[in-house]
Length: 224
Image (cartoon, rainbow, N blue to C red; front, side, top):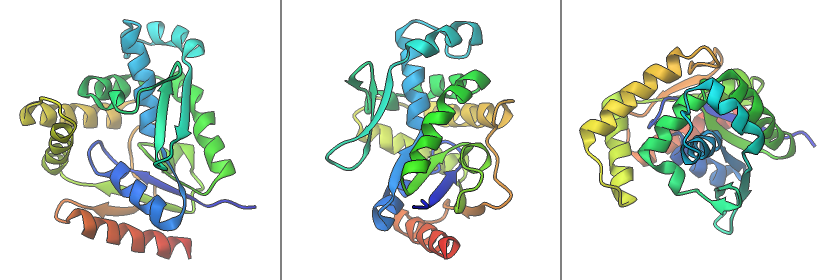
């Protein structure tokens, strides 16, 4: 059986995970949040007291990282670290920063690449991240580059964190968004960039429902 794959890339806070989950449900595909994998590894580094941006400290941790990705009764992806469900914990702002730093290490990306590609070999998948259409699944059947202004993305992330019960300031969230954009676009290993054959979708001026309908139509057209 030949499986289909959809790649959704874009900067932090663009709504990739939210849109990808809804698309996966609508199309009956498996949703793979690759960013959660890097977040889990970033959390592991923090728990071990390791600088997630220091290659010399991070590389010895890789063989020890017991990371597992599974799907719960809710149908969504859950991340496990050493057998513990860390799905909620990896959404903390400091873990986001750690994930951005650790993902810039080439050996880390190579270490996790096989896990990501293996999912696409065995399932129809919608995969979101920073380099899905350019590196992980360069032959994906449909590619989307999801974008929004930094201000819009910061406001969305701020609201999401408040909903999770976290005490944060909008200014700090906005600053983190700008910093992460710079790191993700400027890193030497698989930098964030739009694949040449990816459709650009800017959600700045659209509601959640409008954005979803635009993506659904775009993906259905590409799959045809």
